[in-house]
Length: 142
Image 1 (cartoon, rainbow, N blue to C red):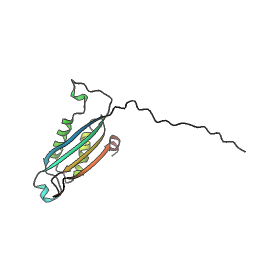
Image 2 (cartoon, rainbow, N blue to C red):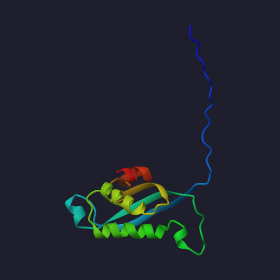
Image 3 (cartoon, rainbow, N blue to C red):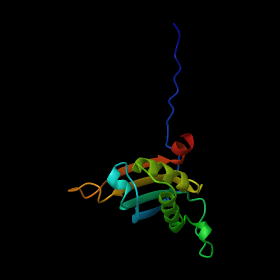
Image 4 (cartoon, rainbow, N blue to C red):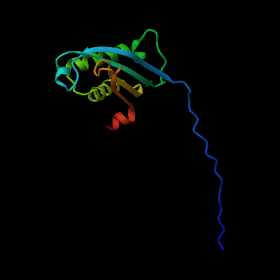
């Protein structure tokens, strides 16, 4: 008869180096541009509302004398404005994908949630839109 030798191993979760989490957000950022697939949407500008949440790397601390030490939300909003001025979108989903490209240029950003809405698109609805979450790994893998 053969004996089985078993060893009991206790698995412990890996300890995190830091419990600090930094989130940068842009709430209710509104621009007006031509967007949509329907004929009437290609004529008149409509409101497009962005809500964005960024999970930011904690590798460095903010330096009060250097704006490059932080994720600059004004820079992000300018990029979003430029996207809609330089390209006409049929779908909010396409705008979201291009927004990820712009936002993930900053390597300190680990993940992004983008919610884009058209508050005036559907009568009797407060808003319609799309919300997408991507990690850097998701983005770089696509």
